[in-house]
Amino acid sequence: MVATYLETRAKTRSANAANKDRKNLLALWNWGIKRFDFPINPVIKVDKFRHDRAQQYTPPTEDIQRLLMAANCEERVLICGMI
Image 1 (cartoon, rainbow, N blue to C red):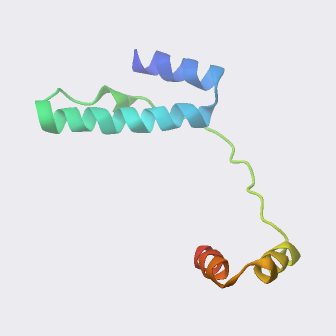
Image 2: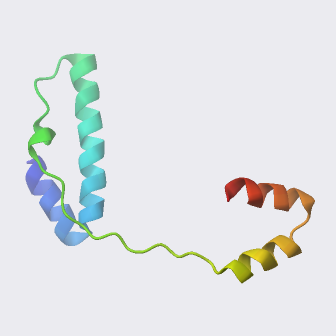
Image 3: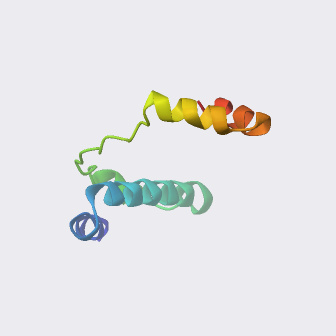
């Protein structure tokens, strides 16, 4: 049942979404094992789906410099803490 659900999820949404669901199901079942003495985790038998990661956007240096020049002191502290 788990494999069928995850395969359907991979086809209808994406392999990455199926992998996120798999991760959450693994965690849920492991919690059930600890808390309620469930039998072994059946989700372990389902392999992860292959997926390609999309390249993340990185703003140009000029844009970051303009942002820092336009920011006030408090905003600069917040922005520099994230970099």
